[in-house]
Image (cartoon, rainbow, N blue to C red; front, side, top):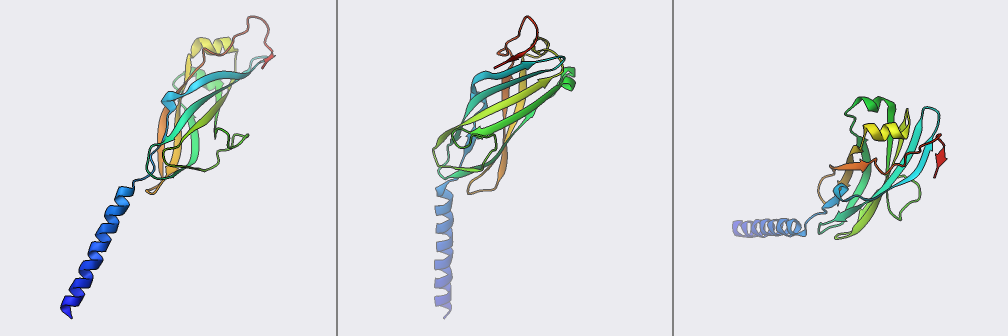
Length: 181
């Protein structure tokens, strides 16, 4: 009887160890939002009025799953770094969406297949208490930390990437302010 129990427990332990090795070799999702490869920065809308300016800038950046399993991106958020006095007169509203998924700027949790490449579109609306010329004179770029929440077979995790948004692309008018698109 003891030999039978020892044999059964040996088989069970071997099966559990084999299953553990099998699951470990399956890998996990490895989702990376390449903020350092952001391209296509362009000005979509410019408004200058009495004492206040507004500009909208957009860009694209790759999202790649380097892993051996599917993964999910649950959220993408941006937080602008505010290192100087000018920021007391500045409001920045970042937005992100997966290209081709939605037309509005709501981030919808999406499954990213293994080895898949996607494009994330980013946009930022900048409101400034002053002229765009003054903004460009005091600030050459916006620094933003992009947070994105991912999950695969492992635990849910927040990842980050640094993004630099060039402000030199903002056109500056010589005359009276107005609305340009």
